Image (tube, rainbow, N blue to C red; front, side, top):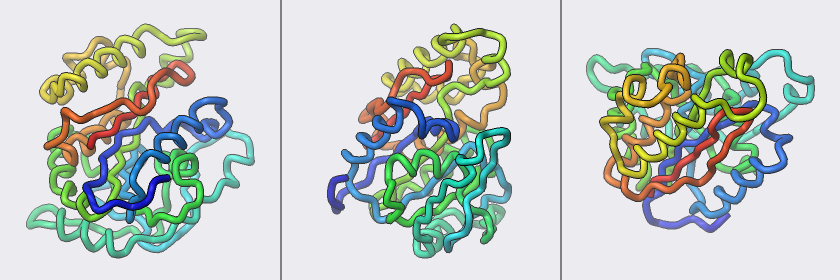
Length: 261
């Protein structure tokens, strides 16, 4: 990883995969190479598809055990550890930026990082030496999430890497009925999303359920696309600078991952 800089940190959206990502022959290396090209963050702020909590909540400020929020996997996936330092200073900054009349911020001190946070971090920052704070999604409304991202954007100038962690397409039930290969709905949505992002068509992205081909099939529930809007909000002045860091498919799902700035 490159050394720390005094400039603005990028904002990321990544497709986080499931625990078996660690065994994939390609994807871990792609994530590691991506992280190696980033300036070293002072801290990481994670928004994961796997934590919806209202009012908005801050997870463990000091290290606590991970949340193994998956079932039916081999035992070794439940032995993974990621002992990143806590981020109390970042938590204080997040409270100042987000807390306002009618928008409280709560602490849930025993809530550890879920797999949407630690699975990619294990590959990107394997030394676990960067403080990490996870923040919940208090809503799935894209516009409200973009507003949260805009309010968090000043953290980028303080060395904080803001990461929205989801999956660019996510319909596990449909995958069971489509057979091997990449299903058409996943490929079509991925291509539409790529073009919308490249043209910075935020209005189309905000209305993706209606404007994207197979929008509701690619995301029958929108929690895995929702973190993108936190990232878009945090990068609202730099949408034209976006680059695709990872693309392709994993078990039929689009693993498109993006960097802004």
